[in-house]
Structures are given as structure tokens and as C-alpha cells.
Image (cartoon, rainbow, N blue to C red; front, top):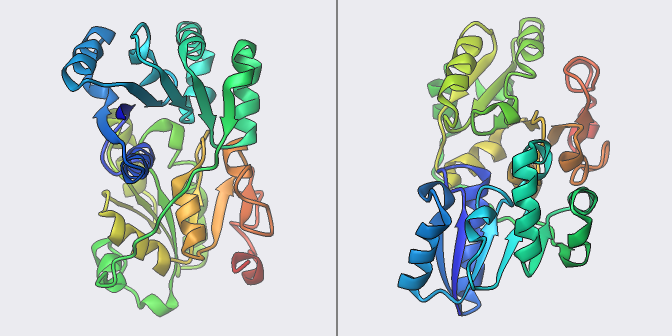
Amino acid sequence: MRLLFLAGLRPHTGNAVTAERIRDHLEAAGHVCILQDAFDFESSSEIANLISAENVEAALALHLYRAGRLLLGHRIPFGIIFGGTDLNEDVNQREKHTVMGKVLEEARFAVAFTESMKEMAQMQWPHAKTKIYVQSQGITTIPNAAFDWNTFLQHSGIHRSADTLRVFLLICGLRQVKDPLYLVDAFSEWHQEEPSVYLVIVGPEVDPVFTREVKAKVGRSAGVRLRAEMPRGDLHAAVKSCFAVVNSSVSEGMSAAILEAMDLEVPVLARNIPGNAAVVRHGATGLLFSDPQGSYLMVGTPAAMLQA
């Protein structure tokens, strides 16, 4: 079957990684999967031309609004995969809510990564209840064996022996929904008490205006560093070398960074939001925190819990 797959493909973002993994799976199953960046299209008419030119038989969209709306009105069957911001953010805007409801009316099926995402969607669009299925996200990790942790630290402006450090990685695109500044002050205070502690934020500059805010804040904060996006193999190697991975997002569908850290057997500290709580069992597979100061993250985190 010839499939069109629409998704946001900004490099080094979770959606892009997820889309590429699903594309590879579909192709391994014998299908032709034409993966396209939803941001490259302005209207459904452009998609109609693509469908015709590529002899597309069916379609798949990752993100109910951003990609799903482009499939409205075409005479091919399609399914959608909820992203995260569609259910957590876009749903609060009336126009987008209406459009997403129409997408679900036309879709043959919809996939949610977690039960909580399914419940949220069913509450918003009861008419789609029978076509929403739960399928947890899969991941793969490919640490680069040639990656040098000491070089990474030096390029991050951390000039101390790796053996004496506790480096926390926060992996995210620089946009407000990921809230990378949420823990900056707390980590900076912690670093001034414990100079071995550092927070390194790693990710692409998605929102230019917000990126400037992040850079300015990080530049004023002791013990906090900012790094650009990295090749996946290097990023996975960095995760494997760090003390713990942190997630401070306002909302998540299912964080690939958390799943990858777990796969690499690295401790996870995550903000207590539904998408994270669906993956992290507090005190068993990681730690959930509700505010920067009121958690084990900032003071007295038991080593045994971090190694759970």
C-alpha cells in the first residue's frame, strides 16, 4: 500500500523521531510510506495534488490539528495519532477544537499513546469514542560508542573532573510548552550549595523569541548550561553518561526523552503532569515533582531512589 504520512518534522524533535520510527516500521511491513513535513503545506489543495501525484491509497497523520486538518475532504481513508499539544494545548482554542472534531469524524481510527490521552480525547469528542485505541510509543536507543563525555562537558563550559560531577540533562526543543526555565533558578541555587551539580539543557531552537529568553536566563544562572541539538547517537551516549534526565514540560503526550532514558537505565525526574505520570511510577521507575522546591529533586534525593 502507498501511504502518505504527515507529521511535524522539525529536526531533533520528539515528533520527528516518532514519525521516522513509525515510517521505518511501515516500510519494514512492506508498505511504501511517503513521509512529509506538515509545516510544508498551507492547504488541503496542496495535499490533494500530492495524493494524486504519488498515487496515495491511504494516509496517516501525527498530531490531530497540525497534520490531521490537512487530510480533511480527501477521498482516501486515514488514521491519526495524537501528539500531545493537540490534546493539551490546541483543544483550548475553539476554532482548533472544532477542526479537530471534524478530523476525528472523518478518520477511520485514532491512536493515543496512553489511557489518559484516550480519556481526554473521548471527553472532548464523544462521537469518536469507538475509534480511539491505545498503543504505547516504542523507542530505540543507539548510543555512539565513540562519544567523549569529557569533551561534551568542556564544550558545555564545565571544566571539572567527570568523576566528581552530577550532571542533569533536560532534553527539549526551546518552546514554552517544554518550559525549560522552570527549574533553572532551583538548579542554580543548588549548584551554589553543591558545585558538583549542573543542569544542561539540550535541544533545538524551535521558537526564536522564546530562545532569546532562554539564552538570557541561562547566561545569568550559575550551574546551568545550554547546548544545541545533537545527533541521536551522541545524545543517547550523553544520556547514558549523565546523572539523571529531567523533564519539566507543561504538557506531554509521551516523552521520548523519558522513554529513552529508561531504556538506557538512567534515572528520570519528571514534572508531575498526566503525560509523565502515565510513564513514570513515582519512587519505582523515577521521581515525579510538582514544583521546583517541593520535591526530592532539589534537596536530599536518596541515591537508592535515583537508581531504582
